[in-house]
Length: 136
Length: 136
Image 1 (tube, each protein chain N blue to C red):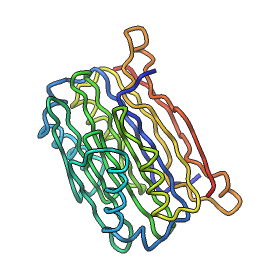
Image 2: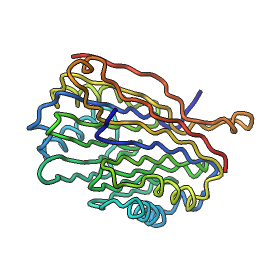
Image 3: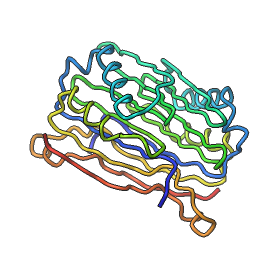
Image 4: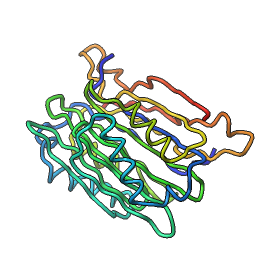
């Protein structure tokens, strides 16, 4: 079933806590990930919290990448929401997993904006497409 | 099972196409939604695409709200990612559904950052907590 968007929710465990607390490094990594995915960056917003943790978003022409980090748990939540056929979200994921030095990751990919025909409309819900869990 | 974050993925169908193409209105609605949820806003970034469509993010101390609109399909994708016990994501959802004049909506709520014990670690994946589909 066709969808307007594809949304990857990436859970990263056992990351490098120093990376997860470094706003500039995280912004660089997310920006690089967007470019590797073949996306066009239009806005960025990043914020460092006290005493620790970073939140940030890269708005791309094809939707967005977001990150929230909990250095105290060596955990980061990444979202890669894209539309279009030319986007390589997988390359963005691999780059972030590598640069965050995640020991373990889990991924859920969802279809967003499944525009139904009239008959399908009443039951329209997002579809969970795939669940992958991998140990590194 | 406890989680660091809760992530609501909201699909809105049959929305008012004029609202979905109005960057200022969408920014106002998302900002109001964040405040209704009892969140503290720290950054915002919105972008209008040509010929139509808006993307935007409100970074809050408790994570983020995001929106992507496809006025041509009367569809909007909303994400409300929060942490903490004092956040009322339900109030934010209701506000956005109402202001976007959505005829139909679907919601998925996910736990993010389920920090496992050692025994649970190998199988750690995000949990789909609840799926609700409602007709308005």
